Amino acid sequence: MSQALPRLAAMGDTARAILWMLASGVLFILLNGTLRLLAQQLDPFVAGFLRYSFGVLVMLPFILRAGWAAYRPANLSGQIWRGAIHTSGLLLWFIAVPHVPLADMTALGFTTPLFIMLGAVVFLRERMVAARWVAALIGFCGVLIVVSPNLSGGAGAYGFVMLASSPLFAASFLITKALTRRDAPHVIVVWQSLAVALFSLPFALPHWDWPTPAQWAAFAFCGVIGTAGHICLTRAFKLADMSVTQPIKFLELVWASLFGLAVWGDVPGTATWIGGLVIFASTSWIARRESRKQG
Image 1 (tube, rainbow, N blue to C red):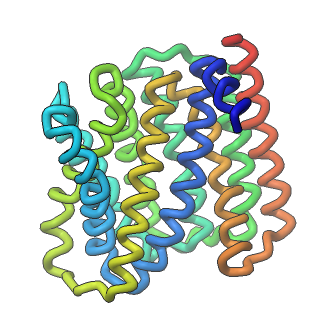
Image 2 (cartoon, rainbow, N blue to C red):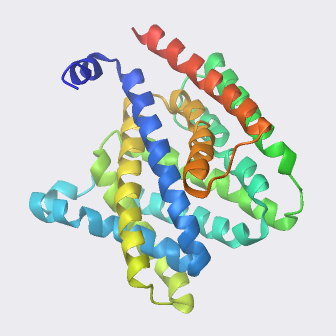
């Protein structure tokens, strides 16, 4: 451990960004797995509101200790816009999720990194590096290999509703990247939780049902790992171009398969292993390439 910290400090920004992205992926898989269980027990809008409300509560002790001035954003309008756009994506996703088969949902959800990379070129003026796009497209092919045996195309119009959430999530993360130029990651994460909780409250109230003690505890857990995941993600965005970090996003499918094996005993099939190897190969290649290039 004592040798690992100096090595981490000696890494370039790109290498550290990739590690932060890997950490966020693991945390988000734990978060989504827990939220999936909660959304099956409570109304999805209620679950979404409570998830972000607990994100605020988790950070409250740090805010009280440091003082509100330490969490005052330099760009308040950007924080509000980011919250509104992220909430819009969440609402579309929650509307569609009961009607979209799991494999279709997985494939549609992994279009977000492609929208992010395109948006980073158009709006953030990042360089369009061919190797990053190759890695992203190979990773997306790996996703399709995993989910293709179960793709049904039976989502109908709801498939387009879920697809519409992807560019909204991408826009939210692009705004996050822009906000990192003036605000610290912990400030951005606090304001995201606060804004999404406020914007989602009107949708949660008509469907309100009080959680059980076990569900309250689960939401507290979601608040901790969700906040930690977004801080890792925001640190990654701050350190490197978004087009560097997005191919790493596809590794979440591998973490999800391992999570399903550990929690539910879901044994990955042949397609999952092949697709996982394709994803792992593409992300490993781009990570090594970017690290060597920076070094």
